[in-house]
Length: 413
Image (cartoon, rainbow, N blue to C red; front, side):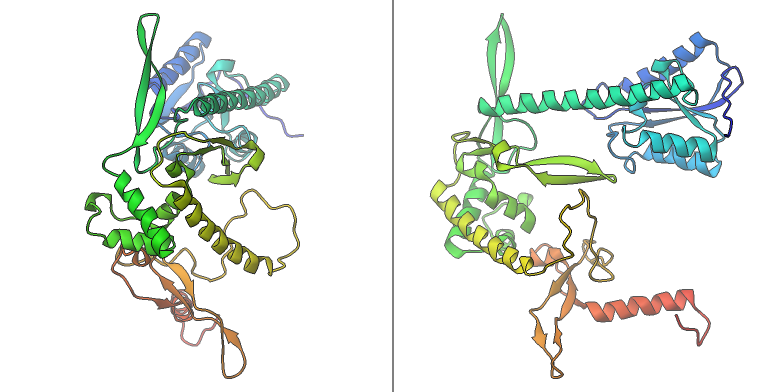
């Protein structure tokens, strides 16, 4: 068995990492973390030398790639730009999520000779049996702390919603929040916020629903129509098809709050959204003044549901691979080679694949005409109407790759 030695009496080279999760927290939290680490070092009398300090402000610990200072620290340690023996944090939660800690600690220690120590454990050596026990305790503590905080937040939001107060999050377009206060023991306190129509934006919502009801437009055509409408103020444009689609399906516009429709989590540094079971939803009728006649809202969504059912029926005809348990973050299935890589030269948006209905060639082969098109053009946001044939663009890109990788004439891939 390989032996691992850690002698705190040596003049170890250390870096400090501090983090604040949100800009709503105490802005001095990172400074306080640094002060606490230095105070603990002085109290223990360790002769360690601080060679660098890395700080992430308003960065959630759930994301690794978005924590730029954290990534810089790892890169500089791994490339040897910073010679460090130890990474110091105030508490281990500042460093990373519970699920990632063992892997990160193992890689840093075994490959780069760097330990991660926390001030709240007096920089306990994680390589000893006692240190390993402390690390397990830290992981359990962090897990339970996160679970309890999440439970309390959800409980508070549900209670606010049941009392017809806005439970939090972005205020729906077309509405505004008004604070309700009460006098308690001689002090004026905010009970919560209620929603009411916004004089500036509620007419846009009403206009969109009226047009959807009278014309049967889907979200893309409706977004185009709104962007072209002279009576809609330019400061609210452009409207995107996906945004309009969210308006159409939101029951808040008929005065009903549907809360708890989805749950979210982080998988592989990406936010994953999953629908909750219907029995877990909280439906609050009469939550706010409706902007749309409930009968009109129901009629529009009946049409949208019929469209969705037709699409679902077509997809169900594909038997797939028979797998029953789907991964939380399945990633992206790339049917076309350049999916996600083609950008519009006008607005910079990622161009999407547009396919014609299937057709039969003279030889009896079934094909589709596939092109890349700017989604901004579809919503009348971008002037780029050009459609790039997928097969032609793929061949051009492959040809360029061949030229770069195999510049010698006559070479073939």
